[in-house]
Length: 288
Image 1 (cartoon, one colour):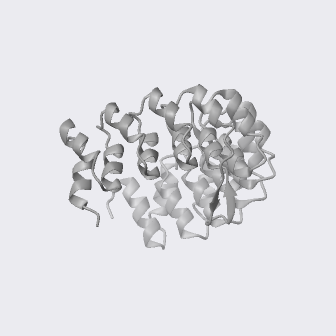
Image 2 (spheres, rainbow, N blue to C red):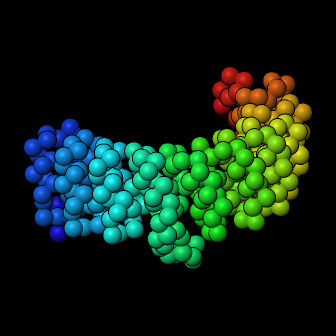
Image 3 (spheres, rainbow, N blue to C red):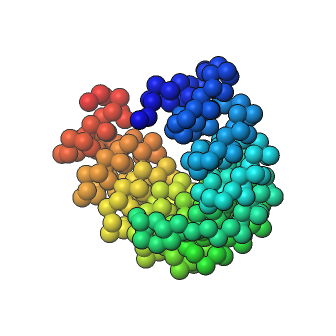
């Protein structure tokens, strides 16, 4: 039976070192895992827990930002793929470790997607410390999950985002549209994508050119128009157009957008929908 009191003590960042050392030897692996997850756990304790017989404890150590190079080196060769994937996600992992794990083809079945996933390679692809060459190679991977992870990396080169804008997988194109490093040119192209999720990502991105947002303001999908209505880069004409949209959620979002001209907000303050009216009046400082 789990001892929740011990787990709570093991999770306490203010716990004394002696207490953590004692709990790290507890018979219950849940307690030992809680120690490994503790943000104040000394590296010496983590080093011992990295040898734990239970996978979940070692995985917690592998994910710890306090784990040093020696610990991550050892766990990067762990016999369990989930442990290696945790190392690959750890931003304390060295470029050398990440390069080695980029070759790890361990797979796990994802029941939510009904498909196998290369979880270690996906983790490497997401890690901002992965070498550029590694990210580039993984962006060409045959599996869309790995390519999506690479394209979502905040350090991914702009050239890769440009290349992946025509990827046959919509999840990859969506990731490109969401990436903070994406260029206006790529966003402009993706604004006409046939997949709703891709266009929605473009509509939400503040880097999307005003002209592309104006085009998306006429999209048949309400959620995309809502995204445009809330985008601070939308120009006054686009916001004025959306302030007359049939969907109240679009008009409400226009009222809340700091970029919306005051005259448009004043008009919305008289909107027949109470939610729109409330949002507009709040912007004007008139209260509810």
